[in-house]
Image 1 (cartoon, helix red, strand yellow):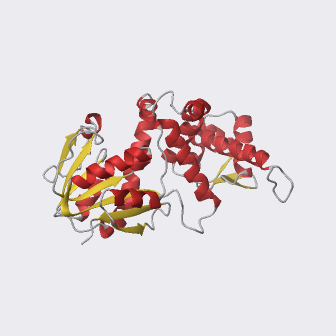
Image 2: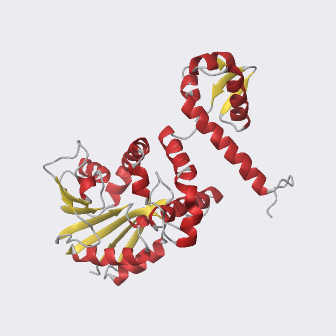
Image 3: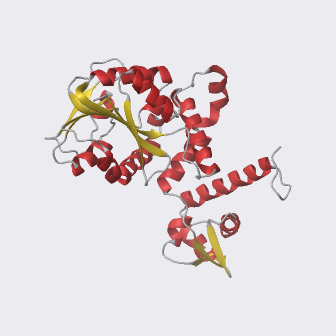
Length: 322
């Protein structure tokens, strides 16, 4: 059993960490951090502000101080900054609700319910994820637009509500994009998508015709939802939709994170990978494998572009030999 230098078993530390995380979520839901944005409060003032029992609030504050989420300066409480509220609430729901039957999924290889079915039953969680995805697309947009090859016509496979398409159109005024995804998704295309330059096509990208002659195909945050055999088939289909000089660009997490990021990076990728498996049998792929599968589809000229705004994600751009 792994030991800390103090001799405390690692599982005990994990239990304590889970307690701190759960306390932070309680603080978010009760409005503790929002209340403290205006300035320091005593425990009594905080209890009044969030309409909580003073003894319960004091107990919660003690835990949050112990784990570094709050600071106590002679009885006056100030807030450190937790992660973004949408992300913290979303991942709490995933880990403690969606993972509830993860043992059954691991035994059988079949989720009791798919991730998107689970999400459709929780509109608030779905809205949080939408905001998270839109924010991530905006954060990466400058780096992505600078790295992508020139293209007049783009096919955004699995493009969802058009987050990356909208950002690309803002930075590439000459580009025209077709967003291809399921009917229930493309009918909810973002209102700020430029309709004169963005069209939608509804269908199943694993079976339906993708069209042809595109300069660039985007597969952004799509492949982690699929098993290897589905990724290989999708690469074959996407390659057929390209012009002779066209390219495929992949944005995703790499199962092998860059050196120097520490154990937290591996931990996040493991959590993400298990969530994908639990949700629909997907997983985080190695970029070396993606490059090999692209080669099978005839796209052997590849380059990997790191993204400063998200060290665990990369762009993989592939084209045919000149």
